[in-house]
Length: 212
Image (cartoon, rainbow, N blue to C red; front, top):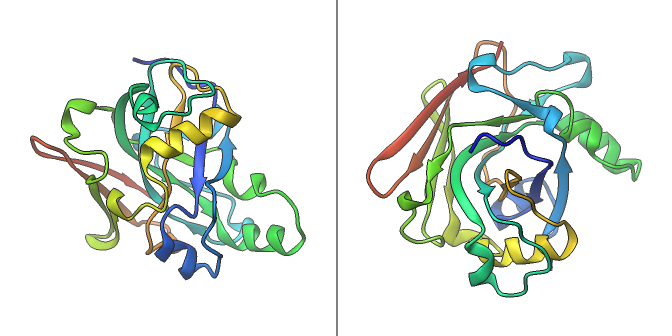
């Protein structure tokens, strides 16, 4: 499916360790925000940002493609049936800017929804998923692993997340859901070589991109 998403729904503070590393409280319900389609770039384009806006942090996340409409679903198991494919994505975050916006009580969009703030790898069939609560992945910078993800550690499991999102935002075919990042986020630097690895059921899926 090549449908351009109407929106990219992101989940913040999904992993307790990541919330702790940024000094955030563990949420009692999913923290949601949206990136517009204009944030999307390909792996081949490479990552860049206006350095006047401060540091840009990597946040590697298990990412879902919605293939069936989902609205007002209360059953997490039924919500899972809307998923058509999975991949890994980078929710790029201008951390200095985000911190400043938080202090001022302002929205995060300037830090999270700038052009190029969403990098998605190739979509992978859900046949590669044996258990939604046991998906693992890694993110490395210059061959040094910085983040390790494991959906068994999510504060809210994937079915619950999708059901909750559908209570707020109607999900349409082609929409993208980024399920949140594990601990280990850090600033990127020019020339960094980035590797994302999704542990599939049949084999590992490896994608590379770079910082300009």
